[in-house]
Image (cartoon, rainbow, N blue to C red; front, side, top):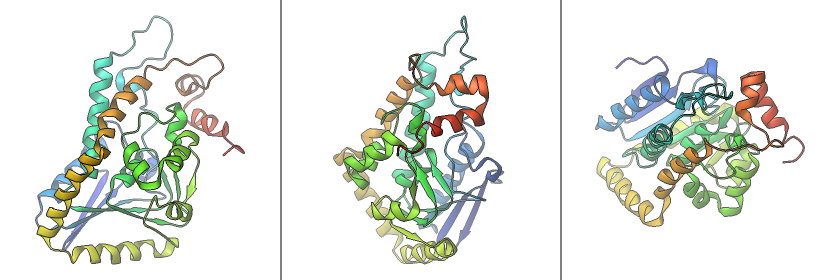
Length: 289
């Protein structure tokens, strides 16, 4: 099929899926657009018997800056938050959140082909979750990885890949990343085991190409058996339980009540605009973490 916000390329046994929304820092819409095209590209790779490995990469300045925060809340039917407006129903919130967590994250985590994230620039929120769900990840040393999305007020909830993150870096480090939202360099991300390898930016593409070529040396049936084995093992380990749990707690978060002395992103976005709301969200943590 033809794509507008995704570039799909296949060379022999390697498929590359490029997030191609650089003017928005490859921010993910909650529905439609790049999200739907990404799943169409995954369908194409899954159904192509010649594809053994899928590499995810971002166009432009970064891998992905996360979800499109202009859509946060409004996707459920939020208004302005002023008195008299009807709040969106729980069933609408649950439906959308289960679509996002169950479909997006679980699908990448259990994808039948081997997956590699090639990370440069910003890798935040939804972008980082997708990287965590890939089999392997290679990052530029100067990349900036964070769960700054948690600074919206989640405090370690609403995160479908939480169990995966804990299994990857350990409980204390996972909670550090989630509760503070602090930014890791690519080099630090490799040191704590969040990614497999950090390399100089100029070497990122070639390093991933060599890794992908090595993975493509594996037989098709071997890859399929290995993925099936790990899917069962991940279920037994409880790693996949995080997807429905993350969707449920995300829905609970969308109905959060902020007290007068707490930062309310939705109110700030309404009164000051998106850019100011994001900056103020992060400025509150400056010099603390």
